[in-house]
Length: 149
Image (cartoon, rainbow, N blue to C red; front, side):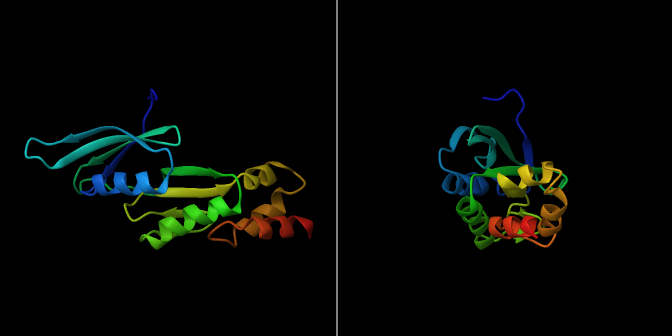
């Protein structure tokens, strides 16, 4: 397990979120599930693609926001589409530039590997950024077309 693990405060649906992430991400493992003395779910620690996360049922004292997000480094458009579609079809809310918020309130960035490469290259950065700002879900073909103009 990682020495540093994000600890995500959810209102009351952490167990449901863990089940959803187990179905969405292949090779997800559950490290621990803890219940309160009354038998209700308290928190659980899972590992998604090598990253440990603890999801906690903490009530409505605090809420998540996009200042903290989880980044999915996608190999290609098919992978972007898979994650994007899975989150949105299950109640997620799309945002801009590859960001979305899932139905549990957790913000995700669903980003193809090519995007940071284009943004770090001085010859393509401005055109790629201009194209990205007009997207919700990142579309690789549109990025490639934008940098050719």
